Structures are given as structure tokens and as C-alpha cells.
Amino acid sequence: MKSTLVLLIIMAGTIVQSQPRVNWPEDTARAKEANALYKDAMLKKNYPEAITHLSWLLEHAPDFNPAIYIHGDKIYSELVRIENDPKDKQSLQNLHLSLYDKRILYFGEKERVLNRKALTAYKYWSKRARQSEPLLAIYDSIFAFEGNHLINSNLPAYMQVIRLNKNVLTMEGILYRYDLVKAIIEERGLQHKYGKIVDDILISSVTMDCDLVENRFGLSFINQETNSSAKRLVSLALAYNCKDFTAFWKALAMLNESQPNFNFTMLLASQKINQQSLQEARVFYQKALTLTNDAQKQSAIYLTLAQIRFRERRYLEARQLAKEALQLEPTSKEAHLLIGNLYLNSFDICKEGKTQAEDRAVFIAAYESFKKAGDIKLMKLAYNQFPSKVDLHWANLQEGEKFQIGCWINSTVTLVARQD
Image (cartoon, rainbow, N blue to C red):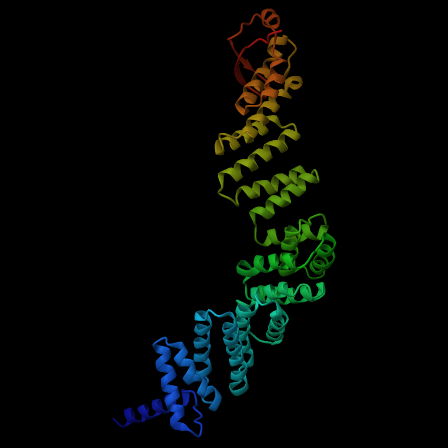
């Protein structure tokens, strides 16, 4: 029993010590009344009445307790919300913002409270042109503090404030602040949430050309070769369509190596195509096939691989890849066109020289593929190279007869003679 009593006394002391201190003014009775009345009005959501009693405390007992500022934040927010008169609304906004300064004066916690003030000021001042520079000053001050005090939502807000001041800031001033924001985003692992947002705001704030992207962000990446500098360079280079420099491709490859990405892999593949490095391009396209489940995208990749094999004169593999594309997207005109062109280009390598009718059967196969693609021009081109009736006669063949084409094609066509 004695030990239980001691424990209760200790607990009671802890509770008392943990409660915020109260500094009663000389008129204690009036203060107690105002404290009770504003809280009661606040519970009833009668904010005009609540501010009447809270204002007395703020004037006569500004160091009364931190709670009057915390509650004042809520009360002023509601008063601003329900006020319809523009001038009165601005007056309430100004009073609301002064509340944060007064709280810092009496209770400190400058970094944390200024963060809250910045968000509120952004809400009120971002649409007031004359307040854009004071708003920037508030945000500059909170980003100058050290530590982890910064509220995440202030990261994109700062960039918006920078955009509001783009006509008074130098390019270096904008980029310096952008770097601060991006560094915190990277440090906190918020790239997926805020990375694109702040990059887009930068793009709308700075008229940037490819020389600037290369010389500032490209050089920064070359000097650091970190994932963060690579991400920054790649995102800006893509946004400004600046890909024609070595640092970009190196950064892109570095990012894709550490974390394979379908779009990055496709870009790297296209670069190899442009460099005529077909074997390396195939490797990237085959990797891209594993990075998406989208049938249309996979079909397009198979078609591109087929085109590469076509260029390499690997016709049998090219046709097989085109058929893979058709399995995924049966209506692909491009796949049928490619197969038709494979046949069209096979006359010289497949002809045996026995008869014109047999050698020209490849054009019938080409015609059928062009027909599936709906390409009348190519159908006519193929048709004009069909065997003639004379050719069929001398080969002892007839129209309508099935004919097996050999060579790599190894397929059957129905013989048709061109009409001369």
C-alpha cells in the first residue's frame, strides 16, 4: 500500500511537470474567464466570439501559455475562411501571420514556428502580387536553418514562391534555391513524390537552353558522378529535350544500371541504333521486353528487333520476330509490311533460275502481306512483278495452283498471273 502511494505521488508530479506552464497576469480572474470563454466558444465553432476572448489574452497576457497561439492559429484560419469582405479578409490574414511572430517572441521554437508561418503565408500571399518578395524572404529564412525542422510540403511551396519571384531573381539565384530543394528531396527519399513537381516548376521559371543544361548540370554530374546529380541531369535534359551530349548518356546509363527503367532502356537502345551499334541495341531492346507487361509496347519492341535483323539481312529471324509482334498485336500493319518487304527483297537471294514463274512466286507472297497491311501502293508494286501467263505456261504451272516457295521463305502461295 505504501509503495502504491509513493508511485501515485511520483506520477502526479510527472503530470504536473509535463503540463505547459501558465503565466497568470495581474488580473487573474479576468484571464481565467477569457481562457474559459474562448475555449468554450471554440468548441461550439463560434469563432467570432472565440477571438473576442482570445484577443484579451493575447494583449494582456501574451506569455500566458503556448496554447493560446496554437488555438489562435485554428481560430484565425476559420475566421479567414468564412469572411467574405476582401479587405476584412486581408486584415484577418495579417493578424493571423503576426500571431506566429508573437509566439516566437514569447516561447521560442523559431525554426518550427516559422515553418508553420511559411505555409500559412504561402496560402494567403501567393495570390497577392505585392507580397511575393516578403513571401520569398520567409522561405529563404526557413531554408537557411540547419536541421530536420523543414516541413515536407514546404519543398514544392518554396519552388512555387521562386517562380512568383522569377522576374526579380537572377538565374543563379533561382538555380541556387532549386539546388537546396533538390538536395533535401534526395536526402529524404522524396524524389518519387516531389522530384518531377519541382523540376517542372524550374522549367516554367527559367528559360534554359541546352548549353546551360550541359554546362551546369552536365558538368556537375561529371565532377560528382552520384545518383542524385545523374537524376538531376537526366530529368532536366529530358524536360528541355537536350540529349546530344556525352554526360547525359553517361548519366542515363548509370541510373539504368542501378535501377533498370523501361523508358531509359528504350532511350539507350535508340541511341545505339543511331550509332549503328545494332548488336548493343538488341541487348537493350531485349532487356526492355522484361521491364513491361504492356502487350502493345512489347509488340513494338519485337517489331524493332525484326527491323534490326532485316538490316542485318537475317531474314528468317526477322520474320519470326515480326510474327511475335503480330501475336501480341494481331492488327499491326507495320508487322505485315515488314514481312512483305522481306519477301520483296528476297528475289535475288532465293531465285534458282529454273523458271521465271517459280522465281517470281516471292512477289505473290509479298503481295499477300501488303494486302494484310492494306498498303495499295506496295500491293501494286508486288503485283507488277508477278509471273506472267506465259511464264506459268513455260513452267507447266497454272493459276490457282498451290506452289511451295523454298529458300528461307518456305511457305505456300496460290499462283496468280499478272495481267499484261
